[in-house]
Length: 109
Image (cartoon, rainbow, N blue to C red; front, side):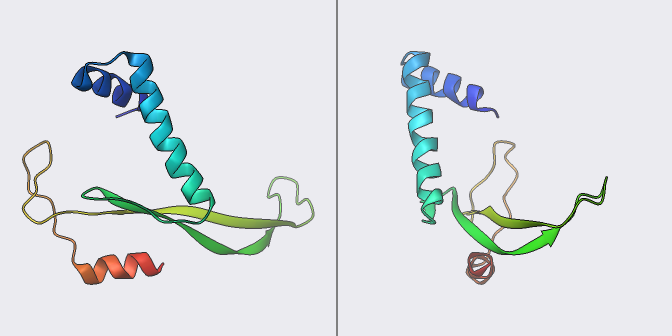
């Protein structure tokens, strides 16, 4: 599903214009991005958890021309899917149960 698909779905389900639906989607995504930029955790109940994970900087080089080392700093967004026991996907197949212990392990990383 793309962002455009999501906008169209919201417009149809909520019976609002596509412009208003686009505004809703952009507001949600912008709010989530702002929170992640502040290193805050974003939790959407019954869906998932988004956090930013910092990695140590390292030096690298351009492999094509062997240019001098450059400093690379990394930060990645970590997404943890929350699966509720007994809940099914759109294809009616049961989703795999994720234990609380495994979720805690993922949150620590």
